[in-house]
Image 1 (cartoon, rainbow, N blue to C red):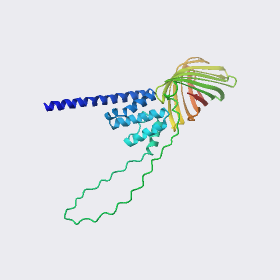
Image 2: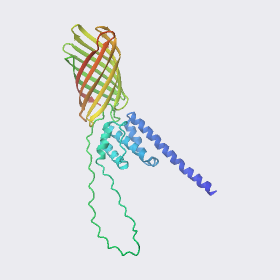
Image 3: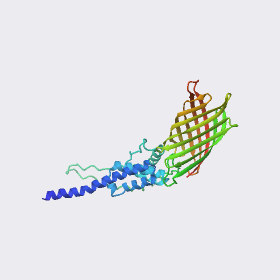
Image 4: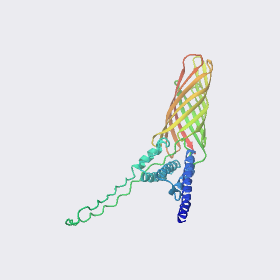
Length: 347
């Protein structure tokens, strides 16, 4: 009878623990989904609940380290750099070898972790005295020397000073308005012709609309494009839209209209102020007037962007190559472009 009561009591105690662990796991999954959806405020709130008792009592060190990593990244993208550094210091103290996964987190997060790791002192090994195994009949040992004076208290660890940087171009902060806009002036060079134009974009959560137009030397070169972008992650996006280019040739004005589908990747180059991008696209449809007909086209672009941090200004330099060919005609036509952009970002 006593055994049955003990077993029943153990089952009653185990049930809340299982429910608590399941609740912590479910809340952790919800926090990861919110982070991937760029909802950093919600992700930070859920992760802090996971790391606070009683939910913290139901997760192991590996799960706690994972929660700290996501929390530090969320605080970084919320613009709370001091909180991100403090969370990474907790992570280094808890699991020194638990570095953020480079397949999940962008380079700026791993670089911030590496910078924090160098400022956190490693724990000192604890010396354990060996037991006295001398026989009892041995002469007593001489009195030990007086203990040395206590060492001076260690100086506090250096505080890592990391400038507050703006989030990457493909990340939307939750504490910012849902709509962000960018306006910029551009200088475009193609086929030896320089054109002046503008670039503008408007973003709503994960969707962004880009518009570009340039014209130079009495319409010797006219170029315009509209693209709708979908921000799949903080560093990867896909885009679709028309692109038109008109330029003078010895045989008259030549006009190309292409419908482009492409993918773009953005990665940090030097800290959080300098980033690079690469774009590849392929035409879903091509329309040409000289010679008339349709064909195929593809191309790409690489560039670098300098962001001035808290200031709204940014600068960009990009180099692109477009190749097109009209069906059943001569060799492929190649157009190389160099674009300088000076922009103003409003959030």
